Each structure stands twice: as C-alpha cells, then as structure tokens.
Image (cartoon, rainbow, N blue to C red; front, top):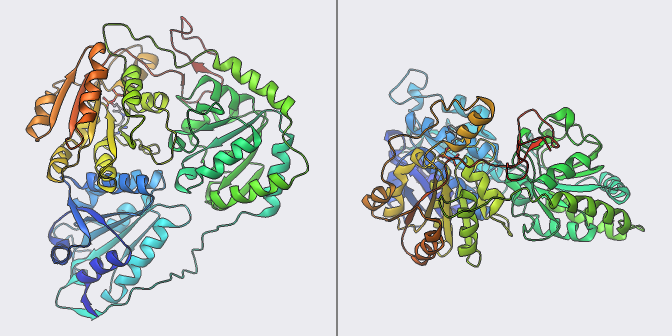
Length: 577
Ligand SMILES: Cc1ncc(C[n+]2csc(CCOP(=O)(O)OP(=O)(O)O)c2C)c(N)n1
C-alpha cells in the first residue's frame, strides 16, 4: 500500500483503533484534513478553540481509559493547545497531540505561523517528536501512542511539517506492531521482597491509613484496592484525583484528604503510624507543610513512576510497578502470611476516627433564602445517583463542593483538572465524555468565571447534539479567590467580583439549548428532575447560590494536617482544630 504522509497519519489512527479526533484546521494541516475528509472511520470533532480540543480528548480519555487524540495547526493552533497539554500532563492522562508545522525548508526562518512547538511543549509533555522524513511518520505515531499509554501515562506531541504530508509524495505504508525503545521500558511487576516488607509493616501497624490517588484510577486497580481495604479492615482516603477508586458510600472510606479534605481523613493522616500510599504523588495540596506531614508514620509507596518515589516526601518502602499488578501480589502475600491484622488494635483506631467523624465537618445549613452550593451538589446526587452518571468540573469552590458532596462509587466518573487546576476544562471535558458514552448522563459543575473560559463550546455541543447538562453554581464571584481574600487579605476583594455577567439562560438559548435560572431552594430539585429528564437536549442550569459560602475544612498552604479551619457552624471563630 503506497500512501502520502497525510494518508499515513489517518491510516495510523485507524490502526490504533482511534474513533475520534478533536481538532481545528489551518494551513499546516490542510493535507491531513483532506485525507480525513476522504474516509469515515475516524470521526473528526470540530471544536471552537484548540484548548477545548485538548480538554475534550482529555475528558474522553479519563472516562474511557483510551488515548485521546487532538489535531491542530501550527503556530497559534499549537500554542492554544498548550494549556490542555499541560493539564493532561499534570494528571498523567494519555493523549496524542498532532500539530502541524511549517515546511521543513523554512523551519527556523520565522515563517508564517511558525512556533517552536517541540520547544514550547517540552516541559509539559511526556515526550515529543518533530517528524523530519515521511519514512519516519508511521513509526513515530506508533511510538507516540505507546509512550502516551504505557508506564505513567501522559501527553505526547507529534509535530508534523507540512511537506511531510504532501499528497504527491507516496511511500509504502507499514505500521509496526511492536515498539522497541532502548531508553524506555516501563516496569510492570513490583519487587517481591519489597512487597513482603510492606505486608510485614502493615500487619504490625496500630494506626494504618491507605492513601490513594489518581494512579489507582488510571491503573485500573480499583477492584484490587477495594479487596485490600476489605482484607485489612484499614481506613482509606482518596485524593481529589483518586475519588471513585474506592466506593465513597462505604463506611471504610473516611473522605478526601488534603487542603479541603475531611477532618477525619486529615487527622488520621496526622496520627497514622503506617501510611500506605498507592498511585499518589504527595502533591502539596495533599501534604500541606512537608515537615508536619504524617509525623509519626513509616511510609510505603506504590507507584509506576520511579521519579515519584521520595520526590516530595521520603518513603521507607518504595515499590515501583503497575499499581494493579503490585496490589495483586500484595494481596497474595497478605493472604499467605501467618498473621492477620489485629482486630483489637484496629478497633481502638476506628474508635478514634469515629470521634473525629462526629465533628461532622461538612455540616452546613440550608435555609429558605439562598441556595447553598453544598445543597446544590447534594440535590444533584439525589437526582442522578441511579443513572449512568459522569461529572466533570471546572476549578474553584464548586469543584471542591462537588468533590466533598458527590459520593463517587466508581472510578472514571469524576473528571476534573486536579494538578494544573485549569478553569475552562469542565465543558469541553464533558463533551469528550458524552461523545464516548452517548447514552450516559453527563454533567459539568462549574462557576460563572470558569464557564466563560470555554463558553464558545456551547456551539460544538449544538453541532454534535451533545446533551451535556451544565450545572452552574453562580455566586457572582471567583469564589475560591474571594475565599482566600476573605481569609488572608482582610476581605479586600481585588478583582474577584465577576461583573457584567451575561444572561446565561438567554445565552444558552441563543446557542440552541435549553436555559434555566433557579434562585429558590424550593425549586431546585424540581428543576434538576426536569433538566435531566431531557435526555436529548443540552440544558444549562444557572443556579444562583449564596455568594458568601466558603469551602471547609481548609488547611492553609504551609500548615499541617491537624491545623484545619473548620466551618463557623462548628467553631464560632474558625479556631484551629
Ligand atoms: C485558567 C485559570 N486562571 C486562573 C485560575 C485561578 N483561579 C482558581 S479558582 C478561581 C475562581 C473560579 O471562579 P468560578 O469559576 O466562578 O468558581 P467558584 O470558585 O466561584 O465556584 C480562579 C480565578 C485558574 N485556576 N485557572
């Protein structure tokens, strides 16, 4: 089979089993767009901004576990995609981003729409390539998919100069089945000696905590994690990225940990003597002040990426390997071990945790006036809990309220930008999820500031008939910024008031969707019922919420887990716990 470079790109995508490509055309990729036009297998979704293409592919990947694929042109097309590439990089999402480049002969001459894409993206990709010969194209794309999806996943950029895709230059096509790269061989199995050490340590623990992150979701290890938690009787806490890896409605789940984690999870972290960290990277939003992090604990750390081990926090028993395979081995060693976790010791520990739980740290009071954002999330759960439901989010208070008040029982259902914290992520990510699962119920919880960052994608939702539900918790402020200004800048609300808001109901209608505005707490549940009953329509719910509400508990940056601000409902002067 003789193919041009443009045809090779499309054929390689077919050989990878790619269903969708999110993109935006331009001069440098027109040959590829022409090749896409002449086939039907790979579907191209035309977004309205390249950032949205990356977030949509990212959302698709987070929900399905497959590699998300993006196609953008050179120069501004590539730079617009950088935010989404960095977002995927920070959360280890497998993605292949094909960027057009100016022809090889003019690279370096400041040609029209030339940027050094490989240079610009280098710090925020797992790997990137500049293809210099058409003969290398198929092989490079194969490597890109392999690198993106193996080991610790991440985005890979393939920069393709226009002349490489010339329709008049055809070469024999061969797509390699296997990839061999001397410098890259991700590990699968964990070291058995280390696993035995970990099990010994776990069995001697008096106050154990299992702390898990996004790696359990990405590594498809949620079943093994659940088995481990049940086999040991230990408490488990998830990071923002790990929510859903363990069923949140199970009593052994003590809530999310970290800056906006529960009182019981953070106190348990502070007092634990053996911490079992699985697929988590000790992010600063989780650890707080490193010097005060788990001061009494010996630490076991399971991670696929050796560079994560002892990066932020020194660990005692590192185990490098795929989380799923390590947990399988660990469970086997645990079962064969002559001793078992001591129920007496564990009971004392659970009693202590029970005491912390009684503080009811997420308590809020829903009056009859303003809708509380917490209530808006709880009511959303009530309406959607029995459906095949996915929730994406933007960044801010609404994201934290969703993480705290929507109990996710399955992995890949909570889709948000944890690492980079990218406002504008939610709506396009929801488009990607809905494209992957047309019959599922997909909602995006957002703020009135975040939603405006990719609002143009309402048009894409119309074109592709994506019935996403937008749940806008409209507090009139960049709420999370306002909260920090209230706490740390004596209430000087510098530029956090979101003025000149559009009428979101009319805006949604002008894009061809259903718009609703809800102000009264008594109307909310009915509005959700009505909106979610419209299975084939996009509905934009503009929910006016109490602007003064803050997210509690909160650990200030640089403080320890035991130094939480609690809700004023619990302690009149927000005293430290
Ligand atoms: C692209 C981007 N710019 C700035 C920020 C900093 N930031 C974090 S939260 C936030 C406010 C978000 O406001 P809104 O979307 O209204 O959500 P709320 O906090 O009110 O729920 C800002 C500006 C960010 N995370 N991302």
